[in-house]
Amino acid sequence: MANDSIVVRDENGSSNGPSSLQSILYKRGSLQLLDQRKLPLETVYLDIHTSSDGWFAIRDMVVRGAPAIAIAAALSLAVEVFNLESFHGTPDNATSFLVQKLEYLVSSRPTAVNLSDAATKLKQVLNKAASTSSEAKTVFEAYIEAAELMLEEDVASNKSIGSYGASFLQSQAKDSQMLSILTHCNTGSLATAGYGTALGVIRSLHCKGILEAAYCTETRPFNQGSRLTAFELVHDNIPATLIADSAAAALMKAGRVNGVIVGADRVAANGDTANKIGTYTLALCAKHHGIPFYVAAPLTSIDLSLPSGEEIIIEERSPKELLNARGGLGEQVAASGISVWNPAFDVTPADMIAGIITEKGVITKAGTGAFDIKKFVGVLD
Image 1 (cartoon, helix red, strand yellow):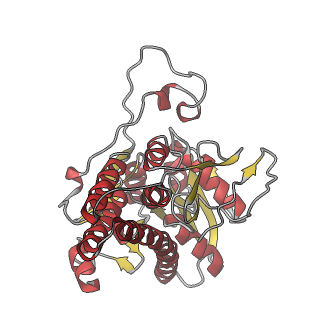
Image 2 (cartoon, helix red, strand yellow):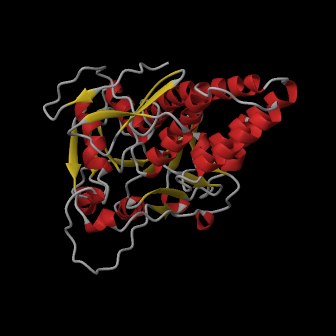
């Protein structure tokens, strides 16, 4: 398990903790989450003692990124359970207690399918444990072990996404071509348990020696690109350039982008993808300039129950994120009395997506013009 020490880094970059970037620091009974609202000037970890602490950390964007949200939620409840002083009840009572807590955690960020998927899988573990246990303690132990396994599997999944994605992009490139990749929002170590999805592909391209440059957007209004992705790229010494969200089309027109790779909060059965607001704009620009647009996400981000993106619930964030500087954390910059529309996500239609990079391989349209995600997932089963 990860080191559980609290790390504090000042604005000059000095640190008293580990050099690797970790959004989640966990050992059994202890959880700290990196407060990503304070990056890149401060690195501060917050203690999470209960599922309520986890709920507010997710809702307030202390932790963000669909994979990291799911892991943080699961572990916040694991810590609460581990530190319970007493519980008087049957295995079924323990299961009901945990299921109620899981449903509460899912309500923190409804668009992120990884969170609801994790809750569903954990409920299955609980029901199985309750049916074979004579003590509530056994149910709690089964939950803790399952939550910890999710943490371990997420890191392995991310590295596979990076490997498959880099190999696929290399196979699509011209002989010995160096690649310049544009990404949006933050999909790296800070958005996952480690390594990243779309940013994991960029990391893998860099390791292969075929990445010429990475470009990251600011990702307004919360600035996950300028605050977090730029921070990770600089940390890993990856050649990178920050651009304004509105500069992406000009960058593509100048011939400086070979591909766009983004993450996903939810992928519908037909391939329509919900991701950070502004993703759809990038896809439109990429299509106009003939640049391939890819989604990198674990299979847990795919929701086969939704036939298309029309059914994806889009969360709306606080107007303050637009009215005030620093994504709502700073001084007011907009006129008082102005109305605000601030959706957290948009949906990119599947026909604009060239491929979906997963930990089991790249889902392509195979000349049919449409993704057959159900078949891809079915073959794996």
